[in-house]
Image (cartoon, rainbow, N blue to C red):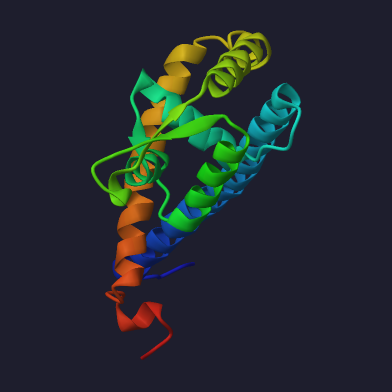
Length: 185
C-alpha cells in the first residue's frame, strides 16, 4: 500500500506534468528545426532554379521583404520584418542581390537612411516564385481539410511562442536567471 502524503503526491503530479510539457516542447523544437531547414531549402531551390544562379533562403527572404507592399525598405526595417538581429548577414544578402541586379538602392537623407527597391529582374523573380509556390505548395496544402483555418491557428500559436522565446532570450541575455538555472547554488 502506498501511504504517500498529499504533498508528495502533488509534487510527483507536478513533476509528471513538467516532464510531459518538456517532452512536448522538445518534440515541437525538433519539428521547428526541421521545418526551418525545409523552408530554407525550398526558398533556395526555387529561387536558384528561377534565377539560374545560386540564391540562399535568406537572400530570397530579403528580396521578398524588400518587395513587400511595394514600398522601399531600409536595413533596419528588413531586419525587423524578418525577426533578424544579424545585420551583417542581411547586409551581405543585400549586397549579393544588388550584384545580381535584383534590387537597387534609393538614396535616403543619409547613408543610414538608404532604402532598397526591387528591380524589374527582382520583381520578375518574385512573381515567378509566387506562381511556382501556388502551383506546388498551395495546391498541396489545399488538400488538407480546413487548411486555411489550421494555418491561421498555427500562425497565431507561432506568434505567441515567438514572444515566449524572445522573452526567454532577453532573460538569458540580461543574466536574470535564478542561480539554480545556471548551475550555481
